[in-house]
Length: 366
Picture 1 (tube, helix red, strand yellow):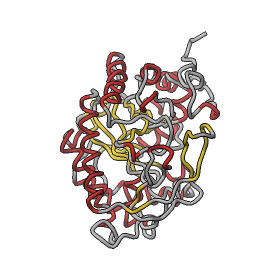
Picture 2 (cartoon, rainbow, N blue to C red):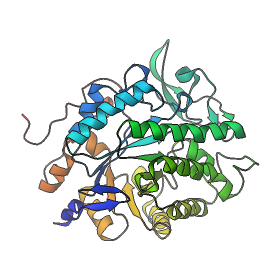
Picture 3 (cartoon, one colour):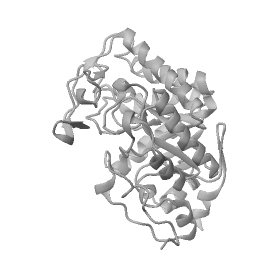
């Protein structure tokens, strides 16, 4: 079977993976008070421990980095202890799990942290919302007008990522993934549509990529480069994102990441998200593949068959599944057996309790 390709082991940096099926990072908005992971979160991840690699939901590196209610952080002692409960449980089941490090930048709202959101430039993301809880209850609210970070504050952001990486190590993760995608802070600095700075962090592609690379280097100093991955979203439009020369911008960023010898690069297929047509997306991904020599994770819109085909063609070494893992905690077993998949319920994706989170049945469940 072509899907046998998905069950070949792989070494990605220092990560020894038993199969090529990655659980994509999935925001579920179910952290507890203080944005602390709970026993319910641990149960959710343990159910999915048969993935070759779990990439956790994005977790804010500082209070100001939060853009949605009930998302976990990695900046307090209580959050570290909550995440340790998760990693201990996943490791006891034989799984491998890395933490995705996150700062949302301008995709935020003062209701979440009492501050004005920050960004490379004071440019508001149009037609974009944050998920907040205020006197009106849980709701989607337009993102607030951000302010531009000062140079001193940019240095503080790098320090926040480094401390979050240290916290993730204490929490027992196998590595970390730097979230540089989907219109959040590092992506905002990278792309020309959201970065009009004229200092050392704006203007040329090299200057716009500077914060991403400084963060990656700071995190790698904590973990070692072979336990650090990076996620990017070339041509992505979420969060009102655009770039004047995307092939040049992302080509430069990927080439610089390649020089660092990281564990993996995680790319979101713009065709899978509807951000680009299939031909345009394929050209971009092929362009970036020539600049990246290590393990590559391809995400968005994948099936077992398309995942196997991508690996066999050399377009990727691993493939990430999102919604399929939400509804199918035993997704690798279902792929191996060519078993039917449970359908996800979008109404339970964000917020709530066990319903639509830990109650999807595994194969053979009554």
